[in-house]
Length: 505
Image (cartoon, rainbow, N blue to C red; front, side, top):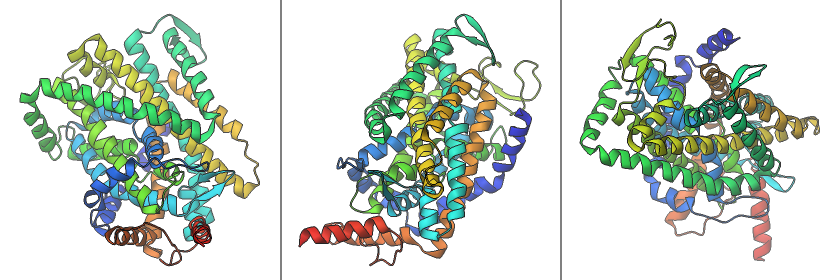
């Protein structure tokens, strides 16, 4: 099974997907005239909007929910894996995919807002909804919904849970060995798993409001604390910073692990981390209460910056400055020594696809406190990401239920996700990461191709951006009339405008 998953991964994550994601980001950056740069000030302003309703969450809460999906293990273990397999130059390609991906995030999240629906007292939307409502291609909506349910409900939760389990053992040790169906598992890991499942069940049975209320407190606090520790590491080693940046830029094109490895791992881990183009961000974006679809698109573009340019860069600088990393080929076997160890700074047995590099970097500067803090950061980042995955799964189950007359029970998917969290916690890191990559790859293929087709057929996001820019230039107030812009099937916004006009009379 592990060999089959690896082979399938190689097909899904072929160079075609890597260059498709980079190309789409560049394409939208040019078409929006680099809106991710021009509207940076506006992004920051919109991010702090706390207007919410009984049916929708605020822009800040939507940002927190989407960041809970973006800021996860990919920022800690994923960056370590990118450096460990692709060399320091992989960090440069993570920056590139984030900068270009911010424009892709604008497009997909604006589409999420534009074609959202009001259902059972709450807003729902995402790629499945905009493929059906914009293109009229229900089959593509169904394909994405199935991909998202499998990816976010089955494949991806195990990656986050696996990193939490490894972080627990890194801090507290294995504990007493317990024999299970999955082999021997340390008692400390099992205690941590029980704690995770209890809190997870309490929150996911409370719906999007409970998820949003939890993430808006935890995510900013942990991200800020993590970045502060990284800045301290940088400050204590200021003399080394120029050389580290020089290493990143030079290695991006003459990577010790090969030019292709640096790009491949940088883009793969960049997309896994910031989720731009993956189609997950639009689900939280659609739940937000805003005056114009472009507003949430810009907020979600900013979230890509937070994820990669801030949090991922913090991780990379800590690892590279402290020298707590190895670079090896993917086939390197720590037990037999087979394969190629390209650069060795630490023990060769250190697992690359894990939080180990980051924890060792913090431990080398802050001692035991650094290791414990890294473990806590991994726990909260991973836990909030699992919450985001559940919300995405629930939204796509709701989409399919609109077609299947509510034949898919939500309880079943809650239990499946919790089982996958348990499964991921007790299984090997490399195997779980490969499964997670499959989930990301499937969704990215469907979503990126779909939003490109939407552009060439209708261009709704470009019309939204121009409309928003014109209204802001004229001094507002900001409203949205899809019919005036020639955008069809944005029925939520049509009804909203009609109600606003009635209220004014």
